[in-house]
Length: 261
View 1 (cartoon, rainbow, N blue to C red):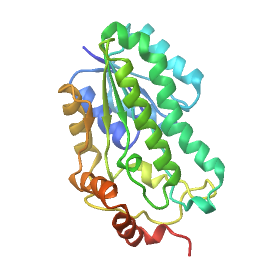
View 2 (spheres, rainbow, N blue to C red; view 1 turned 30 degrees about the vertical axis):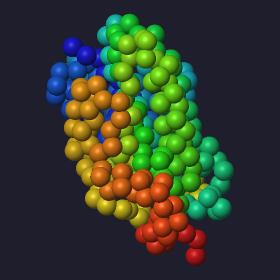
View 3 (tube, rainbow, N blue to C red; view 1 turned 180 degrees about the vertical axis):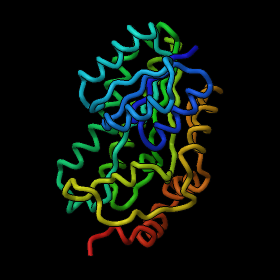
View 4 (cartoon, one colour; view 1 turned 135 degrees about the horizontal axis):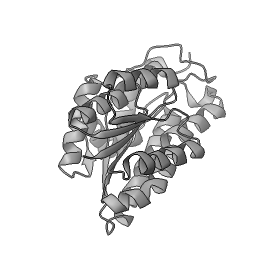
């Protein structure tokens, strides 16, 4: 029976992943900053295979508590899913730098620190790491400068880490979703760090969390290294590389609502 640790597990994609992993028989350790909702999720799953530790994933003490719980409760860790994330919708020139620091801390620093701290357990089990990146880490999106930067850094770090772990028997899957119907966008920050006051702009089909969770677990089970689940985003990424001027024009029209007026 595999032991799976999921961050950002009380909402959206994290909760969809938790339900899917539970349905296939995994023992779960869930974490989320929303302690009330996290406790409710544990009750919904409703058996002794599920444990939870609430807190801010950027807190290194929480990260240590999570790994200690893995050792004490389950004696192992087979799969770490770095899912917790935050975004913003605000022009870079008008955004408080504290917003960029928060986005970078949650989306880049926390998964890096937790993954490195988890390596001893993952080496023992020859386990796997799944990290949720974004197509925003591959191509620029107006109004998301901090998010694009954080996801770009995340991608580069874990691509390098994969090579460094190649002799340790630890697998690593990087997931590059596009637009999902999850709480990360509903909780997006605005320029002042408060909830964003305008609706998001999107390109292509907005996918559901359950669909995305299924794609991720299938890719992980197959031992894949990267998952690009959205064809439209792959085409946009190619366009950005071969015709950046044209891409900028299309992006500027599609995301005009993100620009200051």
